[in-house]
Image (cartoon, rainbow over all chains, first blue to last red):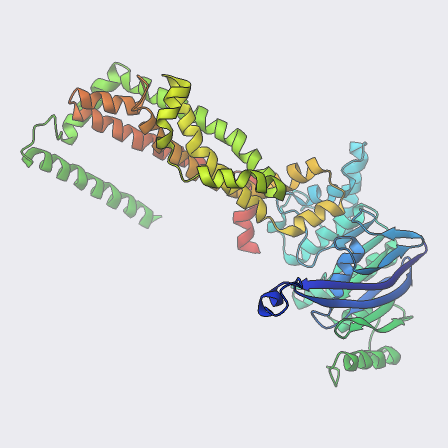
Length: 264
Length: 258
């Protein structure tokens, strides 16, 4: 797999609430609200693409369309010449709040994507490998409610990685974590990406996350949303805003773009 | 620890007080002891009834009917609830019928039940079934409808088959609410069996009560009532235990952690 193309992607919703307020036009089925407006993006397989945007701008909608959970009103997502239009284990979604199945233990959750493997021994070894990769050894038989927020995210990462997907789609994977856990997870995801080289699409509202982690940063904005910035980030890891002055300048630029006049 | 012990003492004291009040009011009511027996009389009756095995026989008969009707309702009601919760066309077909039949008291079915199933266990089991079936269908449907949609997205993401979605998402997700529904439903079923046994059968605690009334043995009537209350408590306790099984824990515990 070489290239991923998001082509002219648009999404409209029908706002049913407004229908009742406009008795003058009883025939229209609510007002159509356009969320995404002709999004066009191209990137290489293996890249970590961080998508930024103000909340409610439609970035999560875009992710759900790429994952195949929703259908676009217009446009399409292509991997080389194959169209992505339905959910598949090839592109695993990592949910904003936990997507772990709460009635399954950590290892049962990790097993989900490889449950059809015939060799039980090999399967068990694989589960163990990924549990260890996210440093959850000793917690294999714990239920999600017995884990901290950060451990839950890591378990979900292990579950996603165990499938060996082409792409991982992460919707605000760090939201709700405390500051230290957030910083650690950020580092872990960067390390993981360097280790396995999967394509990662990551939506965040944290500008620093995007600039520190991404091989490419995309800023969405406007209503309906379109691409305001699409920039490769060729900085070596670990990154630092003081060390890489250019990165620091870009940070201020992105802050401005999102409507904050000075970077904190 | 200490306070729970105190609570226990307090509870037994108040129960004892109730017994004393009962005995006193029975003595001074001016009614014949056949009409309003005191606790001692009732206890004596209880001994008589249990010594010849009557009480045991009737309890088993009632429990058998409740178990049969209740299981029938579980086996048919929960799957139907799952189907209705998962597929809206199914809901559109079945729901109007369910909603229409649901508010009809199972006791209103007695004439039909007797005509259709004759005399014996069958009409009673049918009435128990009716009393449990509708609440179970409705609660299961609601439980399926309130499953977090994220779980279904996970299922699609991992290519779950239709069967896997049911067995690995829907069933475990609704287990805690279904157990609660079972607990409420068995209580209803136990209420209904007594009424059902006052017709068309020659055994069961309901029959014991009716038969004792005809013989003007109010002490036996009260014995029947006490055993009904006692077994009802046991059934509820058993169902509550069911709520602590591992499959249901994720929700009760999950709330604590978030």
